[in-house]
Image (cartoon, rainbow, N blue to C red):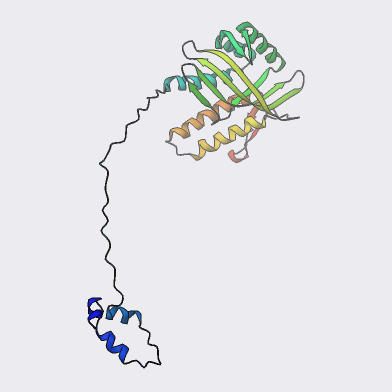
Length: 263
């Protein structure tokens, strides 16, 4: 019994064991084992944890990046004006192009003079006298450092009544524009889609419909809504330049759609 006491076990356990016949086995329940002190909760060991003194992490110096917002806005406006001008009658379009390019231009991978660029533009304009070129909204990307590289997707419809030919498609474009001179110093691009046997400006009409939806469906006092309305009007003017009109006399609003003028 002294041994049991030294081990912290209740002496009553001995009495219980003596009352059990030698031919029988008596199992203690978990509650009895805890009651008699057979099982105990081991005290949590006190572990000595050494802590290192707080050391401030070194501060990484991040260079400040200055974004030339003014040049970015000017570059986007120039590109919009460029495609607006190219959608006008030849005399107006070529007058704009004459003032848009630098003396020397990297033109589709070749270093050429401005006169060379203008000759190519004039040849194209004569072949396709009616044009509608519209940059797809949201496709534009601009980086200015210090010249501005503007890229995006432009969709077009070109028409030649004399030849009874039309052309429709989409192309990527990249213009490098110098904010200091407001001149193009590089131009390149690739045709990514052509609409075979297309007689209608389906891509330009689709752009107009997108902007019309944003204009009519957006909050009236929202700046984005007003911009969508402006884009709609600009695209509508390009469609009119290639001989397309919106609605006919006597039609209600829900009946109006784009069609060849006079039909």
